[in-house]
Length: 379
Image (cartoon, rainbow, N blue to C red; front, top):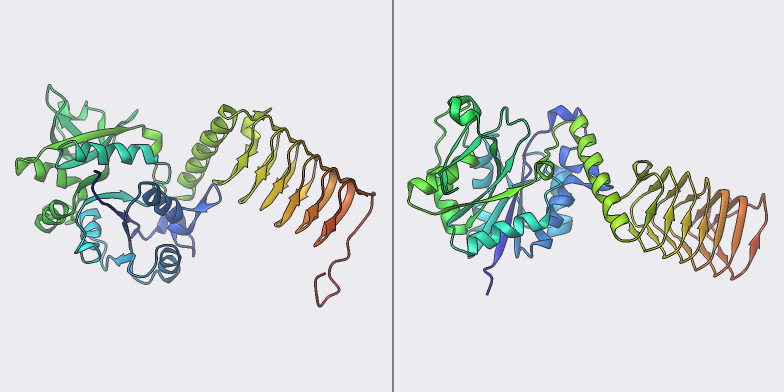
């Protein structure tokens, strides 16, 4: 029987490099805030408890977290004294938890659930502490994980402290780890800050565990999973990686993308098999495209459902609440908002349909505008 699981999400960074009034963790990738990606990861891991460590005076971030996880789901790191201190801030919130805890960074939204699941599996297989590692194409600046001839963990060494042989190692510490709750918080309580920054580093925990004769396991991830977001440029890099992943998944599922690089997905986009997506199409959140539908070029969708074998565009816009049955045709320069189209209905060109019900096989002519707003009410 699997042990109970909990997650500590480190999200207390100030995000100054974002140069934004919006907290870093509320910036979006794939239509979803970074903090929501990290919370969803914990949910997909079946974590019974999740604690998000946030900075002080982060009301918007705290509100977002508690709206999803409920009261008691945040912990505040009063002073930024390193990742180890941030993890320690969650101790009170998990004081009575009996099980295994994963600690990971909230600003690494590309980590796959399968990766952290392998860490839990390694913990249950006998490792006292499991560390996440990756082989870096360019390891400059990363802490190295040093192993023995058998591949067992020996130590973690920071780049600036590494000797020539250690600098040649490209197995790097990703920062995330899994341990039994009691073990984790015991080691965190003993963590020192004898370093140039006088900070408490989470990456020191595996070495402390080995010194205490504990078994330290290593799970490897692909480098692209661990891309951190600390600036607008890195957010764009993460978005590009997400889009690449989403496009590949869509094509693997039987969707034709004529020009994959020009089609943009959201985290919850659903496209059924045999749909054809032409270039320059944007899917906002809450979009479902039915099997066999054709989406012509330059279309934009938000919270819309398109029925099977429908034909859309080019140059069509769908605002929230649009719902199309099967075999509907919406042509060029048609905008649909909060409206239902029955099976086989058409609006072939130059029309605005808002807050309306269009019956099966109806044909909306060119130049039609549904006057759904009189300045006071919408109809």
